[in-house]
Structures are given as C-alpha cells and as structure tokens.
Image (cartoon, rainbow, N blue to C red; front, side, top):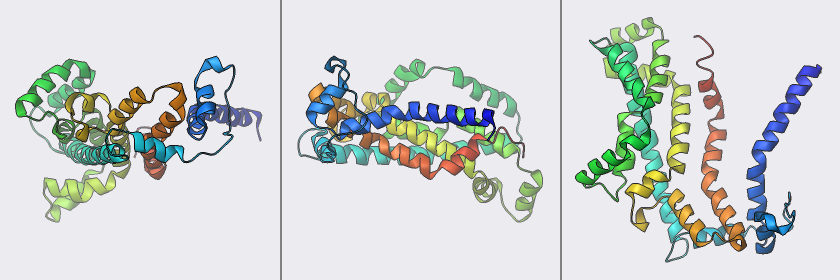
Length: 288
C-alpha cells in the first residue's frame, strides 16, 4: 500500500473516530448507573471519563421513556412520537411533491418571466428565517392554526428554494427526446412529471427526503412556537421538557437514553438511504 494512501486511510479513520466519539460516550452514559453517569457527566469528578460501561443497564431506556412528559407513564413519549412521525411524514411528502413539481416547471416549461421568477425564488434563500417568523405567526394566528400541526406542515407543500433548485438542475439534464417521446404517447405536463421525471430523479428525492426528515424531526423552534398544548408536543419539545425536569447530573443516564432514542430514527434513515444519498451528492460533480 502506498504511503499517501495509508496516510489518507489513517486520517479518515481518525476523523471518523472523533466524530463518533460523542455518540459512543452518550451510549456509554445511557447504560451506566446513576453514580457512574453523574461522574462521567461532570468535570468535577476528576477524570471519570469511561469508554465502556461497567454494567449494561438497558433498563435505563424504558425508565427514561416512561418519565418523558407528565401524567400516565409512557403517554408523553408515545404521544410525542406519534405527533413527530405524523408531522415529519407529511412534511417529507409535501416537500418532495411541491419541489419536484416547481423544479419541473422551471426546467421544462417555457413561459414569460421564467428566468426572472427563478432568480427571485433563489434570492429568497438569503432571507433569514427570523425575519419572517413574526409575520408568519400573525398570519397563522389569523387563520386560527395555532396549536395545530398546520403551520408546520402547510408551508412544506409550497416548496423550498434550495430543493427546487436541485430538482430544476436535475430535470434540465434529462434529454429532451425522452420528454418528447412521452408527449407523443399522450402524456401531458403532469403526466411527464409523474410518469417520467419522478422515477428518474430518485437520488434527488432521496437527498430531499433525508434532509427534510432530519430537519423536521429535530426541529425545536417551530413546534415550540406553534404547538402550545402537551398533547401536541413533538419529541424535540418533549426532550427539552425532560431535560428541564431531569437535567441534574444524577439523572444524566436517563437524559442520554432519551436523547439516543430520539436521534435513532435519523441514523437508521441515513443508513437505509445511504446509496441514494451519496448518489444525490455526486450529481453536481458528474455531467450526465
């Protein structure tokens, strides 16, 4: 093996270990006893950092999830998980459908002012979300949508400029002969988008779905602003409430267990869609 390749493998392995160490430390603390977890979570314990748990206490996980929320045990976690799954699924569906449709329109349909509208849409990416936060809250309050999932879901069905740009760039690379053949077979614009374009752009769909899933699943500010009742809270808000209630060092094992369960779906999704995800990242580097 060449020295430069050996150095590259060493650097990649070292970087991977450094990136994965916080996750492994969380896993170790989540399986520790309250005393060991408290010692590992505070620097005042005098170098109590452990790389392997003494006792594999998997009972910390059901205990942590049972305490999430208030009232009946497990109700808070199950309710928050169901709300998060529903919101995330609707947001991913709306994001993929709306962004692919708008991207198809910008790439394949010719109309007056198309390029100007596209530049205007792209320019909105420079607008900070904090600028529109208060106007959107007032708008949704006028609609009577506060304490419902509508403010979190409905905007996703109107597209996001970044993902629209990705779909547009991908659709622009598809040969025009393929589109013309579909039109000769009787497909209209929507038929071409649904039957031809969507099956081809799986890598873009995968990267849009993964990014949207991770963002919505971990979103804390949106549910905190619009969802006020405990029955509507998501996992991010429930985890923050759990931290405020059991944030002491003596309960570090429960906090880490709840955190790992909350982030686990994002990790699983990435490994499931890894091939399509990496393929989507390489779209801009390889000319089709």
